[in-house]
Image 1: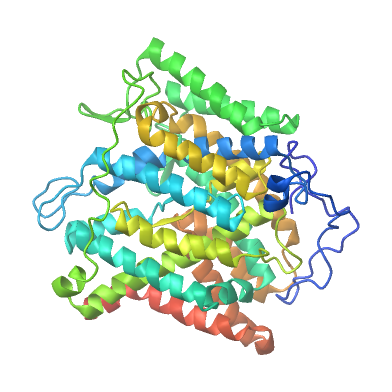
Image 2 (image 1 turned 60 degrees about the vertical axis):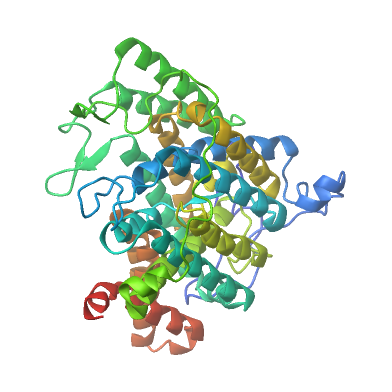
Length: 519
């Protein structure tokens, strides 16, 4: 549960407000509210009434600030998604080529990525009314790129993504997705939020180059040292944001990102560091993604040629029905449970969850998220999903869909200002992820520690998210072990019927590789 030491706007009620702490000793939801909702506040105007700004103890300025923070924390996707979709070599050795040698245009991927992120985040703000931002899902886009390079054409794999999104939409409309969300026990929901805190931290550290692939597993910096100007920029940014958060400065994360970006631009102008990966090979001391230099052109003409470039059933004809369905299933499971984890974590960070650790009025949120998956495939930029970086905006004050509208509008502006968006290096945004991770892991105190049949599933959930770089893997391990261990200690009645279904689906998910080889 969030602590009182958070920055203004990101703070939430503490356990000292008179509420009874969540009783998750048996994996069941608490019977008393986690916090007092306080006196009802009369809405100031129609905008306040629609988004429940005052009711959620927020203000318009906080929502705007939070929306801007979320945008700058996740704006990297406009550049990173084209890199991922064009990085894996196809059969002929050409980077980004599919099985027929076709390469997606880099500029069009960037433009459509920004366009869909903007439109879908706006939709989330207006319909979902929560501070969730959407964009192309990391991890899923890598899966899509691998299938394009090895088995399918780009239109064919994007068609399967559209089908996956439509299937999830059906699950939402039938109420199944919401039912699964609510069937997950409180112990696992808390563990998901904590695990995502660690996951965000490791993303930030990896983006900044503080941790890197090494021998045997990972290494610290460059040769065990914090070498290079980009790492210094990250460290300065981390210390600055930490100081601002501790001092409860409004807009601490946004101020930190902007100040660190300015520092990065100055450093690059003086030192000429260059990219970590360039035409001259690898430069371990270079900038990880964007080089923070003022662009020659601020405005660029967007290329939307990829919109609608998908084949709905072409994949079935190329590789067969069973193999295509397995691909759809694998993407769907990742999409389905990544959102469960993200909604839980962001809701917990903003103190938006109810006494059962569920998000009130979640159906519109889940519907927009499912439609976003199909929209991403239809735009040929891979499945779009709710972004965990939304926690940065929530930590900076966002509580309502108004923040998502701000984020969405900024993404739409970014469609035309892609060169300017690329100025913010990952080393400037990464400290915000680490700080948000630190804020989120405070919920670990709500876990039950005296029952190993609950401790082990929680531990596996928390550990596997950062260690495998996957929210889905963590949730899957937690669900399967929870069902097995609660059954082993004779607590079968505490296992929701849907948990058996989810556990079975995860068993199939983890066994996909042998199943694909079989078929």
